[in-house]
Image (cartoon, rainbow, N blue to C red; front, top):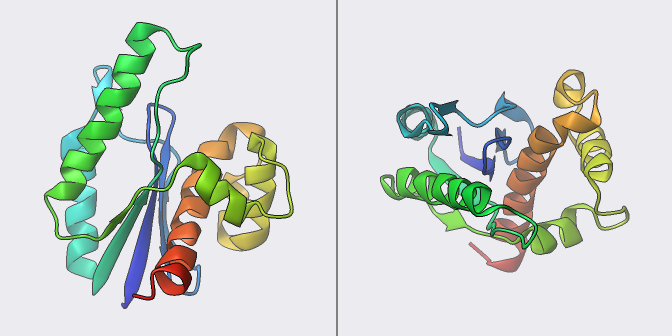
Length: 163
């Protein structure tokens, strides 16, 4: 298998999608692994290790997130902790890493659409037919966004960075 792209929408309600250069979905997780109120780094590490063994090259595309003013301090701390725990797991591998902001990847992947959660679901349903059964509701927006983040990685890696 050539390049694969691991799209990560971090956070407690985030998701992971693994796609190939042809935008075929190889694997998807509608929820980030959490245990006892924190990111389950062992499970994430094991997943990344399996990807490393099965693929010629893994490129990780993780949404660069930050807390919002409306977030409680506890929520912001948990969110930031999960983001940085995910980055620490990724750093244990020699994977190229792209960290697009939500605005950056949405500008490309939702080009002719709105920027709301339902727009992400609709775009992912169009782009990834294999995910359609998992993208039935607005609540599935995290998986939709993880897949779109991975697809943004394909766009960015092949078109902008000239890799």
